[in-house]
Amino acid sequence: MGASIKAVNWKWKARVQNAVAMMPLSDQIYYAMQRNVGSFRPGRSNHLEWFEAALTFVKWIKGAGQEVKGRSFLEVGTGHYLSVPMALWLCGASEVVTVDLNKYLADALVAETIEFVRNNQDEVVTAFGSEAEEPLFQERLQQLIKIQGGASELLRLANIKYISPADAARLDFPDESFDFHISHAVFEHIPPDVIAAILTEARRLLKPQGLLVHVIDPSDHFAHDDTSITAINFLQFSEREWKRWAGNKYMYHNRLRAFEYVQLFEGAGVRILRLSEAIDEPSLNVLRNGFELDERFQPIVVEKLAVTGLILMGTFSPEE
Image (tube, rainbow, N blue to C red):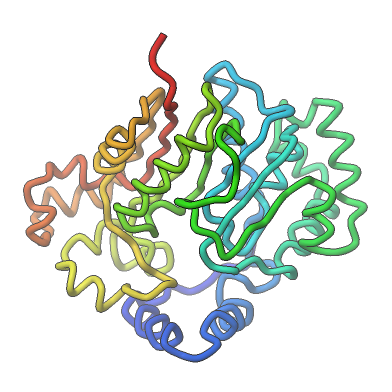
């Protein structure tokens, strides 16, 4: 998809992020940097990746015997794009409410996503597979490609409600407002106590048979750009050291391991229905060869430390 980018030394990136986070108008500065030399450069985004993330939600929900068509979603953590809500609408969702603590949504990035769909319809249809065979998908796709703007036009067309700043642990919606509670690569950026509070609120907001489906990335995100380190590189640091490197709002990572997320969900009353974990082999290899860990992680078996991908689906309804 987008143009290739050279590996970025993670320590250099961390220093830049820490510096920008302390500046006045930091969000505008950070976005401008990303837009000009970072991952938001025109042509850099992999739009299909976000659609595939939405399709993960759709497949898991249908696999649990429920439908997406005509159902309502609450997404935690909008980010800069509306690609996931857009894809869910194409698949038949009646409403998507997407909330974010920070107002990061960028009109230019949403407009680029729409333009990508308009210019690559065959590729998009292929990516959606059997979902694209539905008459409603085809109808909505044609409506989407006619949009000549960005976020505001998409929000109106697709019945997407964007709320920011918003605390996902305290939302102004009635009880049992939503069918599904979702997030993609968000929970790793939230402190554990706040995750617990968000799940408590999810219990109030979900309908009796509602589902939670969350995709979580427990890997060191600096490794996404710096190929010289592994996905568990950050496990060597104490909490104090890690906060010094990545305590800013752009790179905060709680470093929870996959089993700890499961414990958090179960502690909030979630009954786990399905779980998928991905082990990163290079990380597992370095751990088996004596990678030095902070004392917090030393008692944990290496196979659990090396899980760098997690998808979790659950419900608050009791087992029948």
